[in-house]
Image: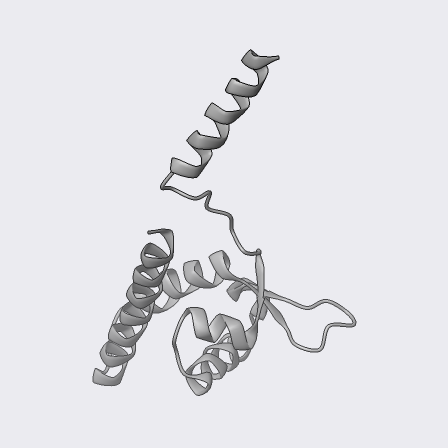
Length: 122
C-alpha cells in the first residue's frame, strides 16, 4: 500500500514540476473575424484577395474557406490560408510598388503571428 501511495506522489510531484505545458491546437477552422485577429491584415485587403480569386474564376476554398450550412460566418482553414498567402502573395512576382508594399505587410503579419505563437508556448 505504501509503495502505491509513494508512486502516485512521485508522479504528482513530477507533473507539478513540468515547465512545458502540452501544446494543443485550439481548432482547425476559424471564423473570419478570428482569422483576421490571428493574421493581422485589414478586412479590405482580405476581401480584395477573395474578389481577385473569384475574378480569376477560382474558388475561395483554395484560400481555405469552408462554408457550413447553418453557420452564419464563413470558416477558414488557417493552414490553407497561410499557404495561400505564401504561394500566391509573398512568392509572386512584383510588377508595381504597391505590390511590394503589400508583400511586406503580409510578411510582417505572418511574423507577428509566429511571434505570438512563440510567446504563448513559453
